[in-house]
Structures are given as C-alpha cells and as structure tokens.
Amino acid sequence: MPTTKKRRLKPQEKTAILMILPAFFYILIFTVYSYSQAFYLAFVKYKLVEPQTIGKFIGLTNFIDVIGATYFMDTIYETFVFTFMCTFVIVILGVGVSILLNEKFKGVGFVRFVILIPWALPPTAAGLIWRLMLYGSGWINRFAIMLGILKEPIVFLGMGRMNQLLYALIAQMWQQLPFASILLMAAHQLIPKDLLDAAKVDGASWVKRLRHVTFPYIRNVVALVAIWEAIVAFTSYDILYTFSGGVWGIITYYAFAEGFSWMNLGHAAALSVIIAIFILIMIGMVLLVIPPKKIYEYSFVE
Amino acid sequence: MKNQKIINTVRMVIIYLCSAILVFFALFPIITCYIGSITPETELRSEPTKPIWVKGPTFYYYEYIFGAPFGMKFTTDPYLRYEAVRALVFTNVDYTLQILINSFIVAAGVAFINVLLGGITAYTFTRLRFPGSTGIFTFILLSRLLPPIIIAVPYYAICYALGITNTLFSLLLVHGVITLPFTIWYLTLYYRTIPVEIEESALVDGCSYFQAFRKIAFPTASSGLMAAGLFAFMLSYNDLLFAQFLEEKIDVLTIPLFIAFLSTQTDLYFAIEYAVLSLTFIPVILMLILLWKKLNITELVGALKM
Image 1 (cartoon, rainbow over the protein chains, first blue to last red):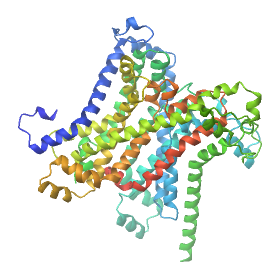
Image 2: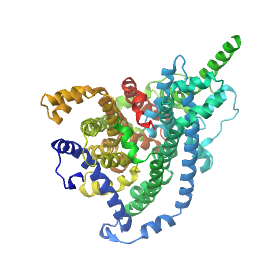
Image 3: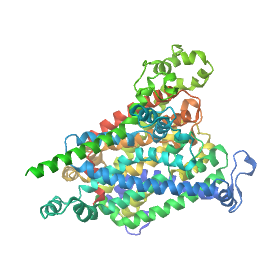
Image 4: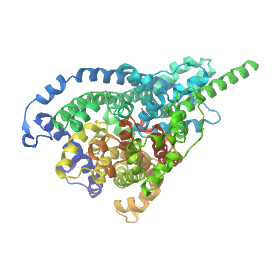
C-alpha cells in the first residue's frame, strides 16, 4: 500500500488515493482471494458430494490425480495444437487483413464495420453457428452442392478429434480475426507517412516496402497480438463448448467439468493452477515485449 | 502513364475481391441464421440437394418463442404435429424473452459499475500523481490477463457456501471485476486526449479534485465513458464461464448460457436454434453500431506507440 511510506502525503495525493481505493480494493479482493483460495483448494479435498471430508489437507494428491487422469495428456496435446494453430493463422491473416483495410478505397469504412460484427457476437453463438453450418444438411454442404462443387454432402462432424479441432479453429478465427486486424490496423497508422512516400519515390517495390518499412514498425504489435491470441486460444472455452455440444473441449473445459459436472472442486482448482502457470509464462512474454514501466508511460504520460 | 492506369485498375480489382471475400466470410454465417430461422424444419433436415433459398418461409418459430409464454398454441408445422413428443423439448424456449431480459439486467449493471468506478479511477491515474501509481496501474492492467477459470472455481465455492448461486447479483459482481481493468485502461487513454485547462481553471476557482471530476471531467468525457460502458456491456453479455458456474435454474440463465444449453440438446429443432440465435444478435449489433460512432480506433490503440 502507498500509505505505508513514512513521509506525510500531500492533500492532493490523499484525494488521489481516496479516489482510486474503491476500484483498487474491488479488484484486489477478488484477485488475492481467488489466487489464495485456488491454491488452498488445490491442496485440500473438496468434493461437494462428500461434505464431511471438505477441507482435509491432502498435499499434492489433487495434482497427481489430475495429471494421471485419462484425459490429461491428450488434452494438453490438443490444447497446444489448438493454441499454436490459432495464433499462427490469426496473426498471418490478421496482418493480411490489416494491410487490406489500410488501403484507401470506397466503402472501406463499411468493410471495417462489417468484419467487426462476428467479434461482438457471443463466442457461444460463434461455436453453435459453425456447428450448424457444418452439419450434413448444413449450409456449407448446401451451398457447395448448389454451386456444383460437391456431389454428395460431406459429414464434417463425423470425423476424428483432430479434424473437429480444425473446424473449431474456423469458428475461433471467425470470432478473433476482427480484433487482431483492428489492433494491427492501428499499428499501421503509427508508420510515418513520409517514410512510405520516400520509399515509393525511391522505387522500392510493394514487397520491399512491406518488408523494410512497414514490418519494423508493426513488429512489436504483431508480437503482442500473437501472445494475446495465444492466451485467448489457450483458455478458449465458450466456442469449443457449443461447437462440441458440451461434450469435449480443451483444458479449461476439463477444469469446468471436474468442478461442476464431477463436483470435485479440488481437482478443478488443481487444473486451474496448472492453467494459470502456463498463462503466467505467456504474461512473462508480454512483459518482455513491453516492460511494465512502458505500459505506464505509454498509457498516460506525455 | 497508361501502364500506371492498368496497375491501378488491377490493384482496385484485387482490393475489392479481397474485401468481398472478407465480407462474405464475416456475414454469411449470420445471414444463414436469419434464413434458417424462417425455413421449415423439414427443409433444414432434408438432403442438401435442394437450392439454398427458402421454400415456404414460415414465422412459426418466432411465433412459438413469443407466443408460448402467453399460452398460445400453433400447429402450422407438420413436423411438429406428427411428432408431438418433440414439443416437450421446446418448453424451455418459452423463457427466451425472460433470459434476454436477465442478460440485459446483468450487462447494464456491469456497464454502470464500470462507468462509475472506471471513470473515477482512470481520471485519478491521468490527472494526479501519487506514490505507488505505477505499481497499482500495472497490477490492475495485468489482473485482466489471468485466466478467468482461476477466479471462477473459488468464486463458485464461496457463492455456494453463502447460498447466492442462482442469483443475478453474484454474476454481476464477478463480471464487474473482470471488465474493470480494460475500462480503466481505455479511459486513461481517453482522458489523456481531453485538454486539462478547464479543470485547472476550476481548481484555481476553488473546486476540490473530486468536484473537478464530477462537474467537468465526467461530463466532457461522456462519449468515452459511453464507449467504455458499451464495451463492458458486450463483455458481460457474451460471458459463458462464470454464468455456467453460478446459474442453474432456468429463470436466471443468461444468453450465452442459454445458447450453450441449446447446443447440448441434440434433438432440438435447428430452426428453433436459428431463431434464438437471430434474436440474440439484434441487441449486440445495435450496440456495435452505437459503439462504432463513438470509437476512434487510433485513439483506442494509442497505447501501442512504442
């Protein structure tokens, strides 16, 4: 706490601290409570169906149970595959879309607005829509047959888990691409105009301008978007839940299922601690790209 | 000169083609929902050899959703008439309106918390210096990056112990905390763009800092505050995880939870799913239109200057 400093506070500082206290405490209580409680729950027995044993300290048993569970290794593998694919596809396409939307042409405002719509819709809806699209009698088959591309409908949803993950990726991309492109688009506007014009006058080709002028300027934002998308994909839950009809998902799904369907909050907490460790590693990577001092400075100090 | 003209034309063609693909990719799934919601179920389930356009548009499914709560009964759908058992699955669809209202209550409450607390906090961070501000600001920002599941499990445990699961209040409280960091970050960026002179003159005239905030900064930032509120509204309106932990009873469900619930029902009418989806999109798209007018993209991402 700032008040622990020995020197007397100026009245202005007192007001400032009073004004931020409500929000700060609100967030602090939730964060500190959640973290300590999640750690506590991860080390005790907490089965809602056995109320008499709740709170009994059992050491690392929850972690051992969770890691030894039949789903764990497959899920970790699928989570990493999903995260990697999502990040890769969204960043590549996001850069492409941001380049397109930075061109000046009639109707660019409309396109910018329209691509944001999927981002605003609930992720649950994105998952369900794409499942309905991919059904045997769904719209993709219908459309392809109408255009004469397909003779027989393809049963997309009857394929193996990896294929399902790939289709879920389409839904995830549909949802997340707009946000990534808008961030990258803003990054493009940080490039000094004179620099691009100078390169153009000097006869640099489009590809060369992209490589040597645009990319160095947007590199940091690309890294940031990549890490952000990786975090989003890693903790992706809503889209996969509705896409699979609540039957499977990646790691967050199992944390939910352990806690809610199987009524074992100890296991759920152990899994969420494991998830948090992975996320903290990713946050560490964010901080490598932008040190905390810079977050503060760039956020409001001129 | 002529060469340049050809290059320009080709460039334009490529740009419009890519834009068209992009717009199609973004809009096609949404349009199919609206088409699907007015297509008879028999058509949706039939072999997909038929053309894509609607045969015999029907508003039966909307009539069902809006009419059923008032005890109206329609049997214009032949599929339904022959398989009366399926109607049992429909009973929960009666609650669509109630659920939309629930979602609205929670999301509006969250927006209110965000505008009020976020407004004050962001103002303080922008205008006043005080010991520990860097640490507190970074802490608030980074608290958003943590996975929601680690908040959800302990929060469920405490709500269960207190007996406040299945209330909208418990949901509102936790949505407030997950949306607030983004609001504070966005509003600090916003306040920075507002000139400080008017407030300074108010301070010289003897206003306190809180009065300067309440009488001058708060009203002048109204458009930024509204954008922040809309953002918070959308985040809350779209959240599934917390709702799924906290709400079980049908009369306190929120929209994402209801969609998740529909998705787990394997023998539900596709047309009903489409109709519910179509209805839930309307408020979000309206929000987005409002937000789009308020939002200056460069301003929002000004923090990325590095």
